[in-house]
Length: 141
Image (cartoon, rainbow, N blue to C red):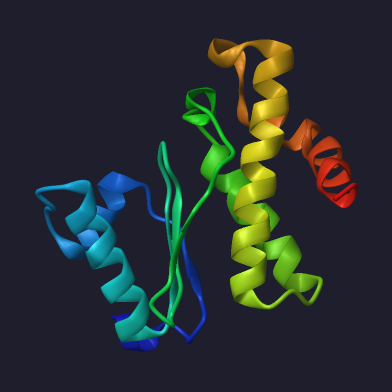
């Protein structure tokens, strides 16, 4: 199945989906090792969503995202992330950069939503509503 996926494709499993892809991991470290191995072996970008979202690249590097919050664990949040990633790719961003920027923006928009709504009240559309503010925030750097 992996051979049918084009190189540099972005996979975005949550921990349960990732477990079905690579099997059980005894520790988080083992899970990250499997994530990096999958990315390297199949030349994919593997985004493991969760409390500490990580991005494994085909070159073997793994990055951890510093944005996002528990309120984002809501129906549709992953679909919003997919939309952000697809948009960045359609705009011509390289897949690795699209993944890193998209995940950061998604989390930052979720952080802004949580500040306004409260963690328990965040829904996927709140993340979308705060994307412009998140993008403006990073443009100031």
